[in-house]
Length: 242
Image (cartoon, rainbow, N blue to C red; front, top):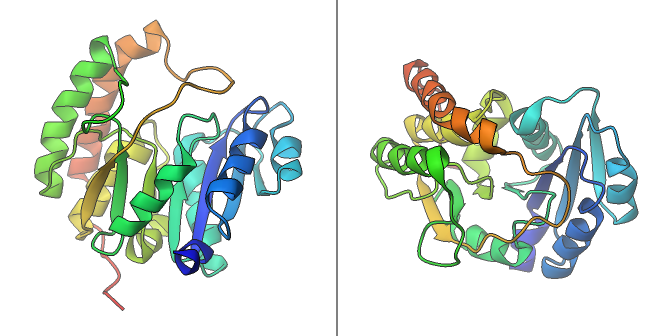
């Protein structure tokens, strides 16, 4: 597994995460010896960069806030430019346990994209209200698109293998929910094999949640708009197997 970790880049999008990013980076290095960690500072106004660098991460800074999709596309391009085979997305707020990365990487032997799923039989994470309804319906639709059972299509905890990295470096969507819903559609329609691994979601270590009651109320409509745009866009080519 050490050789796999040496070929793997952890990408952590971070927007005003000075409270948690340093601890998360240190936990990544402790749980995954030999892995490389890139923090993408997505236009933060705080000391995210300083804390991430102090913890040992390489930091790429975006001049304005582009969202998770824009930050991840930069991460995929960095991976291609520096010769990494795999990319694992981890939130910088501490909700994702780096110890689960190994399970995701193991599944890349048979898949191009592996999702760390919160609703797959482990943990007690719950979504409520419109978000819960949207997640359930999206899971049904995207499971059919991907031709496999997916229970958590909006998870930000994902591992991408070489073919998915090459695809996403050029075509990773930056729109709201594009980094989750549309990315899955792009990958599945390009021929990527998608699987999921059950994971436990932790409580945020700092910063502000991305969802409040008002945003949750709008989540349902925006999620299906994102899905519609994803489905009407033309399919993209996938790099052949090496």
